[in-house]
Image (cartoon, rainbow, N blue to C red; front, side, top):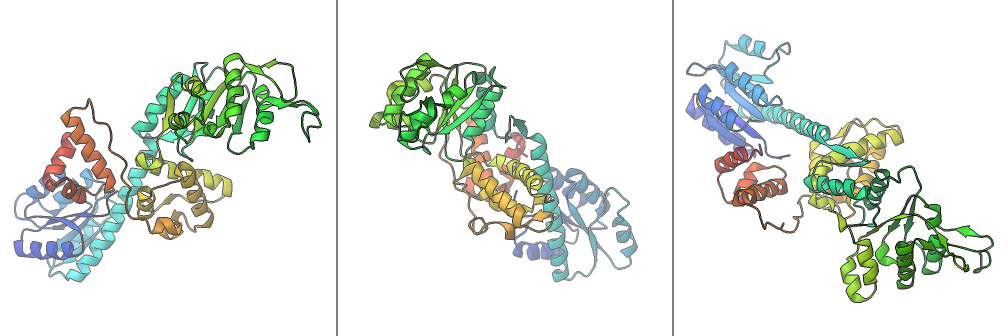
Length: 458
């Protein structure tokens, strides 16, 4: 969502058009000045404008109403300001009629007061860009898919969901790798729900949240009197998950002694409660997750190599951090608003474009979990149907720059694919701002527009 509005100026009086363009460019608008209706049509076809300023009467076969019609067809969110000569006000007022599908935003009578023009352009452009950004969010939400609670539009998520569907049908142990807050438990639940074990128990243990002395008891249970406080026999989580799935979160924090006992259970299905000499058996599918680099832990001697290969047999599902899949953020935000409305009995509809840009540009160290918490807080504290920049936490209000991700592996791609990918990433980095993108790429704006059209990125 670009911050810079594109204004098309159509004026057959050259000096008058140049004066308008110069005034608007000083106000940080991107402008294109043309002097005929046919040139305006060509400009609209190359790049639909956010706002059009056009003389009502133009030299040649096309007039301002023809330009208005074409602009509205190319971009329904576009707003058009007509310029008329004294005595033609009635024609301009007719063009403002809301009964028509295509109508003007406002009109001005020559001679034009530049300050009034700037004010009208500012209001029209704000309206047009808000409508455009809202439409883009709706389109993204409509395109978004939801699979067992996993929401997104990005290729990264689609790729891992495709793997998830295949892995879910197997019986093998699964490893999920990702930063804190990326949704590892949600993926583990999706594996369970899409496996033959759906409907059977799904048990969760965070290996980092339980002390080493209690971890074995939590997993395998204990018999009465096996340690201080063991006043009754207690079934462990593995037995409780019999027939279903056991999710071991943060397995990289599991002590070495417990790793050996877990490996035996994975290989044989045997479960021996603490303090018991009797071996029990459980039919359990294990899903493990970690935010740590297990390969490094193996090299450091803090994670068993045999256990690593056991849980890594299918390869790991890797969940990308939110900063590497920013195209999912607007969809997630809208979903979290809907969820917050149900939970808190609120009626927020959306987030204003300026606030959404701040959200998309933020680095999100806490990933999806942090995003959800922020949206919930905004919905609880915000007033009115539209959440604004003022409803954002201080850290996000101060956020301006996207933190670029590391360079992708381009091996095997054609030069055309590499160029397309580079343009997409640069465009995303500048929030859709084409002028800044062209400057960063070292090419002219016209060249960028042509490449966007050729690669189907418009």
